[in-house]
Image (cartoon, rainbow, N blue to C red; front, side, top):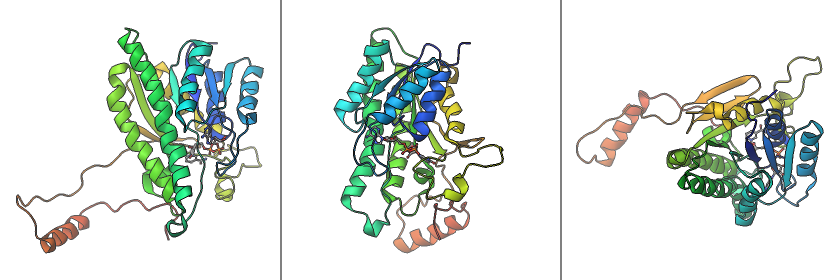
Amino acid sequence: MPGICTGRVVAVTGAGRGLGRAHALALAAEGAQVVVNDLGVAADGAGASSGPAQHVVDAIRARGGRAVRHTGDITTTEGAASLVATALDTYGRLDALVNNAGFLRDRMLVNLDEDDWDAVVRVHLTGHFLPLRHAAAHWRAEAKAGRTPDARVVNTSSGAGLLGSVGQGNYSAAKAGILGLTLVAAAELARYGVQVNALAPAARTRMTERTFAGTMAAPTDGTFDAMAPENVSPLVVWLCAAASAGVTGRVFEAEAGRITVMEGWHPGPSADKGARWTPAEAGETARELLAGARPPQPVYGAP
Ligand SMILES: NC(=O)c1ccc[n+]([C@@H]2O[C@H](COP(=O)([O-])OP(=O)(O)OC[C@H]3O[C@@H](n4cnc5c(N)ncnc54)[C@H](O)[C@@H]3O)[C@@H](O)[C@H]2O)c1
């Protein structure tokens, strides 16, 4: 039975564990040939191992699918370029990129070291930008050669990027940056046949299973395992498929059995004096406008 990704080649970063692993398996089950990237780092980004990527490749092949391992660091130019090259060298094409790799170093802002800021911004934001940039350069070259692709990028943001999350200033800033990057990429790359969307998932992985042990736990009574990472993957597979034609620059929340379209910033109440305000007037006007505005959604973990 052909799947909705039959004939397509998809690269997934951080596909050795958690959500990326589930995406890679689901993509392969729908016929995609998958480049399984994972540096195999610890939960805080330390170390490296080829084991996680290889295990997922073995699992896909054991189910009759096609996959190849890539164990480069996607926060480096070399790693991002070789990710794209692995797809082209192995399968002769690249149709979709799922940016997913990342790790956490949670601290309250007053205790957040510059190194922990840099590492988390680098793995999420630069780790999205570099594979996107290299994939986009390939697709632009294809378009210029008269072979306009039907390409897809799925970026991974987070509720922390949408609403903010206490103790995750570095992560929230990086994940909010990914939303901005998604909008620009969607606008810039449309002319080359590339659609770019973002996802804010929630699922039980090593990133969440301890902090949110209660909400993430698997049921023991055989009912729907709502927080299994496999529940997020169907939307990712569809966004990678040709079937998602026309959908770009969008952000979805996906968790359990729910898919939500996130609607971004919209102008709320506004006032125009037609001249410069005094600070006192500006303040008075701001308060009046705020009184008529929708209250913001609470920041995750805020007291
Ligand atoms: N689990 C959730 O509920 C949740 C919620 C919101 C967002 N996310 C996002 O989903 C994505 C996947 O997270 P997860 O929960 O599956 O975590 P995870 O730790 O299970 O998997 C992340 C994988 O990324 C890999 N990785 C880290 N740095 C890398 C690098 N430089 N190059 C290549 N691979 C690298 C790790 O080795 C790991 O296997 C992340 O971007 C995360 O921020 C997860």
